[in-house]
Image (cartoon, rainbow, N blue to C red; front, side, top):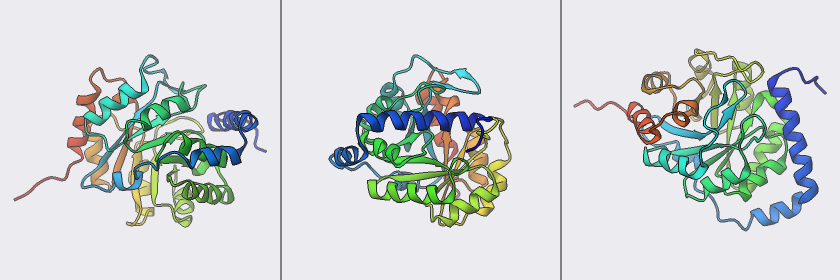
Amino acid sequence: MRSLTTYLDRLLDGARGRVAAARAALPLDELRERARGVPPPPSFLEALTGPGVQVIAEVKRASPSRGDLAPGIGAADQARAYLAGGAAAVSVLTEPDRFKGSLDDLREVAALGAPTLRKDFIVDAYQVWEARDAGAAAVLLIVAALDDEVLSLLLHEARAAGVDALVEVHDPDEAERAVATGAHIIGVNARDLRTFELDAGAFARIRPHLPDRVVAVAESGVRGPDDVARAAHQGADAVLVGEAVVTDPDPVAAVAALVAAGQPTMTG
């Protein structure tokens, strides 16, 4: 086992502890049975395949790098604002300690009917079924956190649960690993989760390693319309935006501006 020396290691250790506690309260077989009774979610993949660059807007109260961002927001109210602005999907942080999220937040947002991503540090099949039980349409799988065997297992569990997977990478090697699994949606996170440093050139550098069949998502560092336009030029199909929209006093207008920047230019 690796020593807990990075942000990512500590977050993964916390995730394992949460899984152990949840499994002790409700065994996986019982969770699966309950989750299969929840109505199927809308397709996260289809939501990201429209014309232009689709916007995934994030419900995010805090972060390890910035501390509190919007600690008092209601998850459902924030998501409604994003959807009113034209967001194609909503991402919900469910990590409780450093991001101040919860599965209740996920459940509230998914109940609105929009494709909803569970963004957390997924290390166990149990968390995939928690997401399905809460109504999520997709789960985040971070390649840096998983070896190939576990990554493949979690992708299999996602398919069995009827949810999509956003497979997140940070460098070309991780991108090649993600492609090898057959992932349909691959996100390039410009923020290194080991150090939380931002690399503005990450998406442009890694996008050529992703085949055209993949839905490519630019994550982190998207602060305004110019960043969306740049991501579009670099080959992004979608962007995931958190801090810029959760801290804006008018999230409807903030999301609408991002959506507009991602639309294909009309010539005639």
